Image (cartoon, rainbow, N blue to C red; front, side, top):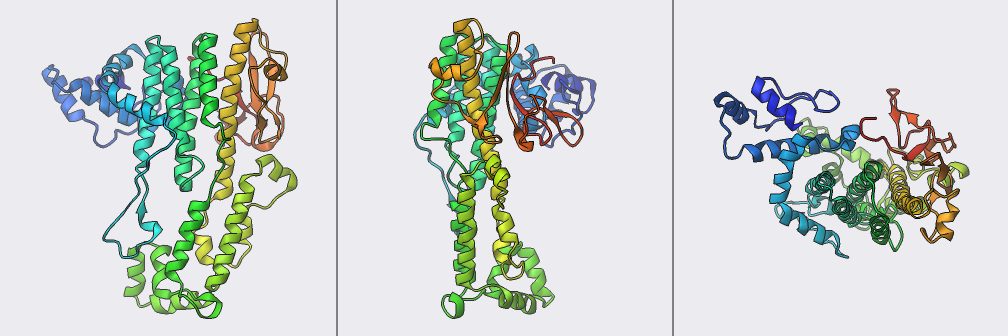
Length: 457
């Protein structure tokens, strides 16, 4: 990306093409091409050239990271390293603060509220800046890649552990959005660890250390989805948009529920056309009363909590209805408030189970690598890892309720989950809607944790 940016500026061409795979992207707003073009014209490097290019490229990469998985696994080029390494060295103190914070047993999260807000509800509370947290995690992965480039593989693995620890602080509590961010951060760390294992020979002592560190992150068990934050927020809405007392515990107030149902401009538009009063009043008359609304809300969130403990495979075998289906069986007019604010709980629960088995698969792969170094071959079966003390127990694939499938090959192994079709496809990966191979979580093949695509494959 850096090489392309510099060459494009020199030649007066737009910065539109990714370095490694040729996928075209438009130039993002804020890219300092004017400054760099001037440098190219004068053939003179300004004092902040290095910083300008580095920061611009980092911002571009952070925007595109999730959409270029193949590129993310390619080792840093010499030119990329030349420009990125000094920037990270200058900010080493900040990275050490991040690592130190990730190792704490607690996490301070700042929630703020607009003091001028008239509603004064939980929905007015601003979540911590999750984008910054994600950016820090991605920079941690870049730091790991630089350490690996410098031959400091152990340090690169420790960077990944720090990112995984940071992600764990956001899992299993708070809002669903915060939990998903924590899960995504954790996934970045595990992916980078596997990338390192696929491209670097690591001594057994380092493998063991990383395995222990990852295992200790979730000593109390991997956190499953928690919807209590969403329950509390919805009950707070009820507190604000229903009357208190009377038939059924109170009725929906026409002038208030519209604030939550849509943005304020639409709300004002209704009022300007004189439609607010008759429509909102009619809706309020039809809607269930306060006690019944709270009862159905608690029933829904209780179902979410129960379903969060049930693996996707169990739901499939038992043909369990998801929580959303239960809610959609209710009248869309009588319970529109609840249906409007319903979280996609079942989908989030599946994502968490995917993250759980990905974490456990990474720990298992580290154990398998140790076993091979110690015994000059991979074990014939996974049970050997437990009996030999490399693992305490075998993790269960949530898409089969059996251990992950392991097969020893000539000089390697394959490890995979049944994935969404709940069928053993022999380690054959599925394809996405465009017909492209999808290594993980396709609904028409297995999710293969190992081997992963190596550089230049």
